[in-house]
Image (cartoon, rainbow, N blue to C red; front, side):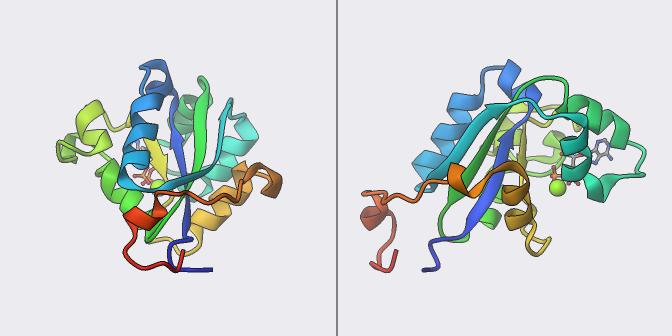
Length: 159
Ligand code: DAT
Ligand code: MG
């Protein structure tokens, strides 16, 4: 394993799907040089929503959050690359789109905290990326492949 192998869980939320943003969001991560290793278009049920957002259980916005994330299909993905979890969070912007810089995904596409287009694993929560990948994907759904452009994304050859 090299330091280019970090994986993170990313998901276009129901608002992003409805607004036709899947393609643009995938393009941003491709353009950055990250490698897609898993993806599926799916509907989150109540149980999965509770598990995924378990850390927020009991907070005033929790029920609304579960209702929103189960309200329509999502596009779940696993992206791999150097420092992937933190870099994806930087590309997403802040939790509240209103605080997110233009050029970030939430800063370009959102105006409302409750509809912030995208989820990405929290890089400050140790192991959240692996936990979320395991929650949404079976091992067999993750693809090991050589991305030929990695030689140009990374200077060294240890990928
Ligand atoms: P993030 O999605 O940036 O990791 P989070 O984990 O703190 O943010 O919260 C999960 C989601 O819950 C977030 O994307 C939007 C919603 N949310 C967070 N704080 C909220 C609040 N104070 N009011 C309403 N919704 C909130
Ligand atoms: Mg979070």
